[in-house]
Length: 455
Image 1 (cartoon, rainbow, N blue to C red):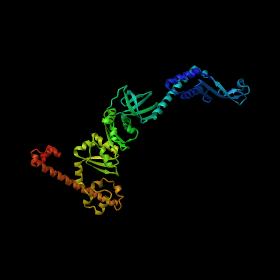
Image 2 (image 1 turned 120 degrees about the vertical axis):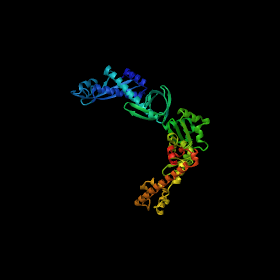
Image 3 (image 1 turned 30 degrees about the vertical axis):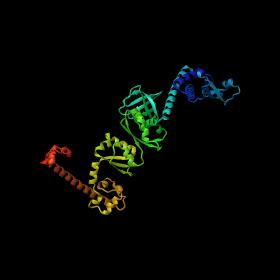
């Protein structure tokens, strides 16, 4: 059954939509199946064969030969059947050939509408599959629409969505502007594929490094970890798998050419490149840059670190809104706490050791020392259920030790407060203070307080 006009009309639509011939053939089969069901009913038994090369659409309706026709859709009389083939008998199967043109203009127009719907569905599936296979890749698109909660970017026939939380804070986008993005996720919704892209994701920064640093792309240099606060600062830990190549130097490039290209793309986001070390103390020290710790107390079991800094360096160590220490914690895998050296030394001198507290026997404080609990502060910060497991310490004994320690700390704090008050009074009564050498603000006391103390 040749009907090149129908095939040509459908092919023209398919070319506009960029649908391949094999896919078009399946779509035409589905379209004519829909037409047959509308004309002959859902119970009709039929075959649709489409040959795109020859421009043929063949439709066959299967019937049974009967003496008396009760259902003309599924049955044909023996007399009518013998007009086509004289040897046919009642009960034999019969195949009726249907001319596609017999569906009429109205049904053909309806077929074109169904075809368009089917092609749109195919297009959406093609876009979804294409971008699902590109997750993690960098692409370049044109800003199409700017909304408060998202930016929409066109790449070919696909529209990509960059939500607010995937944008670099402070960046401004203009309609028609070309921008680089990374494909982060694809979701098929009822209205079609939703392709999520990002410029704030850590993977975007990693792909930029791979594009700019050939040694990273070919795995000579490995990016071990990235910590990022988009638009502000990032820390990147790198490792060279070739002892002849300096990982940091390769990432920076000659006169900073490589790193500057990345920084420009990210609108001057600061990037710290850190050489990896298997030694935690070295790695953590490097990660805390530009601050340099005076000392580190590392607890491997709890994966925590107390970093002690010189007083004038503490603000740099912590960074704006805790940014520096938070990123350092992210890339090293350790929970980092920063403290001034002066506070640390005061805390150390004020520590109350269990062996110095009356009411705790030598046997008991030695048992606690054996598990790393040496001071009153350490004891009170330790979960009681863990201490009960210490062989030789019962729950009642621990309760008594806790009460003794709390009382000892209370007495110590009262004594320290009394000493501080005496020291302040002594200083205020001194000639240096009266002559203006010290100010009340040096002691964190108000003018009224100082006058009262003098009285």
